[in-house]
Image (tube, rainbow, N blue to C red; front, side, top):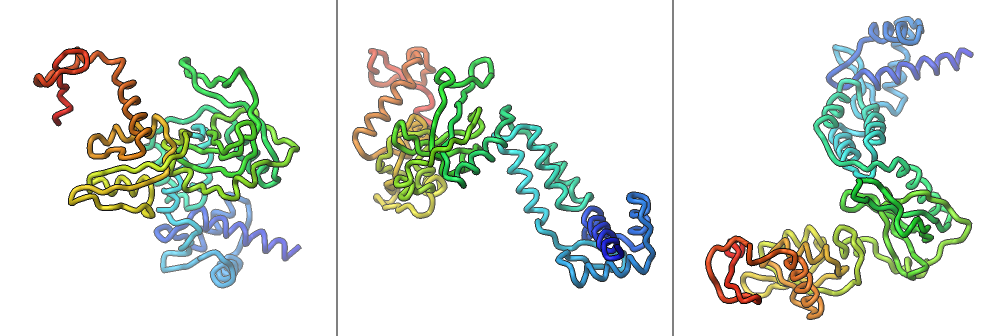
Length: 352
């Protein structure tokens, strides 16, 4: 019993140091005695407290130190910059609900002293991001990891937002059946990468849009496909995780866009000089409206050089975007050669 009592008291002192102290907020032996008496109704004499503190400093993995002002925990598992990074990540994660974010951040606050945790709490108040309303995300993530670890297929309903701001099931509530392989984070969302046997290809699904997930008894399919699957290349090839046929696309860019290309496709890409002001790069791209939108957003500083059919698809995309707009009503800066409808127009932004 005496041994158990000593272990219990040591645990109380350890927890108190973790909660109350850091290098800027030490605590004295007398304060430790007082805290234990008030909080736990545990009486501990000075000699016992001193013995426990000595044990924690010399023989435990807890980094307990002391100075003229008292005892404190110096180094912890996570530093404050690391905790702030984790808090920001949790708060920014759109697939987490507001309540789940607060619960996780509260746990992260417990990894430092009560004094420093106030800094983390202030970070939360200042941060404001749109959040999902799907409370089942945690269960879905847990179920998907379980299915992956146990080599099982899963079935679920997939949802989408409607104009009433409600999540509704797609395809009339039809269940998707896939073989899950990887969970990945991209574009501030959590995605499941899975083999879809119906289409016999790899597809991805946003986890926060998965509903009514069930783990099946059937073994996973598509192992031969995933043996040659490169997740990094897959993510780089998609824009905002929109699927499309993978094609090798050559882009011609102004030299000032080198950073944009490296940020998007990584440092492994080969930038080939094309004269003093331009370079070209060839990358695998999932052809989609999102890719065309990215190219259009960069403007004339980047051009799709090849293949020709992708250039044609890009032109068709641009025409489809312009079609709803009445160019005859666009702001006119100066007259220019005739447009297709017989009018002579030039919008202001074309010269800027």
